[in-house]
Image (cartoon, rainbow, N blue to C red; front, side):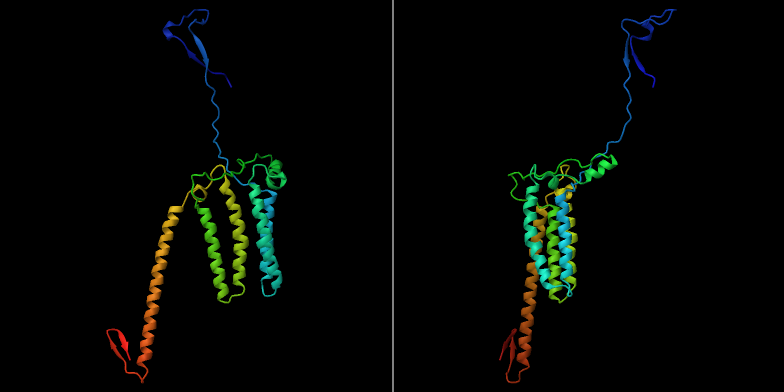
Length: 273
């Protein structure tokens, strides 16, 4: 590429000229023109959670124990095996994962290969592609000014999922279904639990991904909806009590009027035998 020069000097009529060629004036300066570099679009680095050995173990145990419990809960499976698997997954595995997950949030948990090593680094090395991980997990304690935990969309999703699946399973069990409660339990215990587990890792994103789901505080909206639900429940209870009392009084009047041994007179809505 031929080098370009920008000429900054005196006006053209003041430049000396000779027949032997151009001469350099003492007030004449040469400045190199700025180089034009190609403009490449800047790609935003997206954050993704690490796929560590510990997280894969938690996922595999959840899928394995949940599927085994669903199989043993069928009429052909043994009831004792189902109870044993439920005790193992509901007590032992739950307590271990609770304390190990707390230990995972430390700055330098040991062993490194279990909690920190990303298994995708080897695949990226084979493809000669740089890591798009985007930084370490952000585990920060809430400031003391906050009175309590934030009510985010993700936490509401977890709470409502547990509530809905629990109510649906209990309803199906009370209605006498045999297979439907097991299917509901497997869907929530395996599919929903694993999905919410990996989705919850984005809550620790240093780039604040999905702020509407993990950052925005919905406590005011939840409080308003809770008050509306309480008022609706109170109105429904009052309506149910009024209707039940009216039906009970109507049934009593009908039985009294139908008895020939009593002379009944109805005065101002009261029954007098």
